[in-house]
Image 1 (cartoon, rainbow, N blue to C red):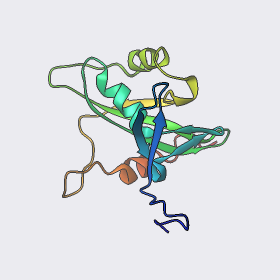
Image 2: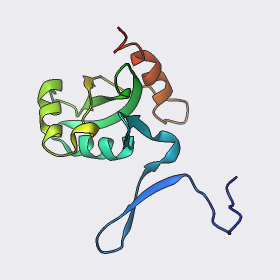
Image 3: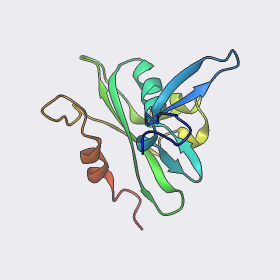
Length: 135
């Protein structure tokens, strides 16, 4: 149902409006993670991670968590020649975003899995890390 009865077209994009009235797209509604009742948009966390020194790219996924419903898990790839420390990256992220958006776990990978079109396969990452918080 992309077209509503009152004529609005639903794109699936999620935005936020700043104090000046400008709207920024922060993610897709299908990509939304709900951690302990709070909405987390992976694109927002990825944008922050990608700005950190030494980070070439990142992917953020939600995995099942017994207490929070979903936990935020980040996977980052270092720039050539860079060495990344997951603990240091997490500590840096904690100073920049709300605590509920901070990845519960952060992993440094050599590369992210991609499909034939070059798109990151977040479903593969989610499946690989699904059991992280099982009791």
